[in-house]
Image (cartoon, rainbow, N blue to C red):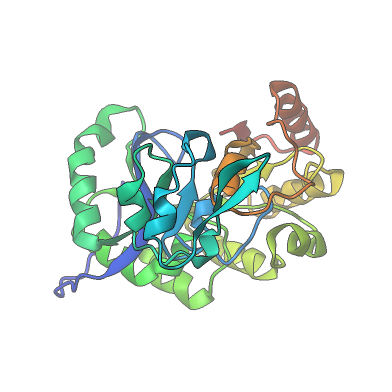
Length: 318
């Protein structure tokens, strides 16, 4: 049941940049859900499955396999995003997406859908209207459905989320978070969130910095705070073969579950390679440390056994 107390003062609409709203999501909290994906993240995890969420602005994606090298985009782009270079006697299309300002002029002349923009500025009312369209499906499953805020890092958008939640009273709300946000932000948003899906990525703080761009001290402080406040928490465990599936990390997970026995459960988030193609389309680099294949069922079973061996009985695959 949702037990939030809603404020009655008038709500002033505000805006945020999102990159997707996904209906009928079944992996982002209980039941059938609508997941809102926000742009912007303070972390830079090597394995990020949503690299289009790293920045808050609109980004250009170049789908190389659809490009015919007609070069129409070169002529209309005033920022120099699109260019040409000769390869084996043939002119080829080059893209520097860092120069893009999101004017979309190149999209208008591309007949083959080889270009797209990621990111849309939306109001709380626009998102609320979309959620209400989906809401008839929320009670269908055994577990009550609802809305999940994801990203990127939705904790960067607390004012937007507070206003949005006031517009959708009675709907179950999940927050998927890395935990890397100020205490003040968590204090503000905590009363309107029914369930936190809290990532626990790496145990060692130095390795966490190497792999995610920041250490995990603030993350652990916020996990402790939410637990002390009696919030419902599911611990989410992104596991990447040969990167963070170490004995030290499994020990750390077991320590967290023992320290906070009221955590509902832990969910393994197996590594997949979907983010690699998106990184290429965005013109981003791909770390050589990342596996080229996703986690196999054999690996996942081995991870579950390692955690079970450490007394983690409330762990499952997402």
